[in-house]
Amino acid sequence: MDRQALSRLAARQKGAVVEFAQDILLAVESGGAILGGRVPYDDDGFDRIVTAPGRTDRSLLIQPKGALTLQRGRSFEFRVPLWKLPSDPSNYFAALFPMKDTAPWVADDFWFVPGRALLAGSSRSKARVIRVPRVPDPSNRWERFRIPRAHLARAYARALRLKAPPARARARSTLSETAQAFVIETALKLHLTMGTAGALQTWDPFVDRQGLDASVNFSGSPVFLGLQPKGAFGPGPDGLIQVHVARSTFQPAPFAFLVILEFNPSTLTLGEFAWFIPTLAIAKRVARSRDTLVFKVSPNPKSTKDNFLPWRYPTAQLPGVVATALAALADDPHLRRVPCRPHEVASAGRSILGPRFSKVADDPTRLAQLLHQAVLASKGRSGHRRRPRAFK
Image (cartoon, rainbow, N blue to C red):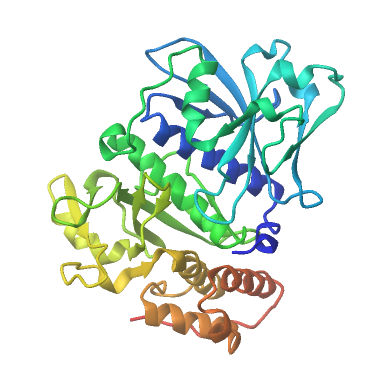
């Protein structure tokens, strides 16, 4: 994805991307010792509360900010509304992240600016404009707050007045299964948002009774798909990625999908392949299980041990696949099956976009943008419904 595509993100999406990226960094870098919590609204000027349960009762109020482009080719610019800062800014910090167009979506350095430094020499009635150079510059007043991205957890621990967490390799053992699930779910949301330049938007159900940890739709469209993200921090001893699906929360539906991902904690990126499996395809297997069913998939391109190869895609193509499946459902809500196998997805894409599909099939961002436009355009047409298609 290019920088022009990034600029299409809505303001709220830009904010969500930065917040999600910070959440992943904090979880992985701290090994789960330091936790971030979302604030539903930021009337007090912060979107995250950071704590270290069991180690301190102190918390940090964090306002993550992102910058997409360089100003005049030299510096990143951030705006922090000072009137929103709490009356006591001692535990308030602005975390300023230049953004990238590839995972982990934020640059190698960030700026961690305390509230008191933000207020120094400025009025609370104004927005503080912070300009920081792309390369280190000792003459810049904000240079002292520049921190390597890899030291994020250390900086947060220091602000919590804790000893820096011991240096540890980013390994599977540093995070609980619940924490790993959080990272994988968040990474999927980031991947779908950034991989479609904001054409897709994700959101969480308030109550998860169907096992759908996330939902996705086109901005402006009421049609959605339910997603159940699962995955692991790398393959097991047998070379396979193992995931668990609980029977108690599994509710198969035509619009619901199991999405299996591999997350690489050393690079903070997703693995080479992703699996986009309709829940109806595994309904009988889950129903026969006593409690939790174990699924195994192979990240090896030459493997024959993977029973879910019909639904395996290069991870880079996943945003386009999800967008095409969603567009097909929006185009014809009477579909008996949502397209999810490669030939089904290609057929649906050609049906909606015509000759343009072949030109953008290998460009998930452009594909999703065109599908988004087609979905919104179809809302304004009356009496033009295609005949229902049944994908086999």
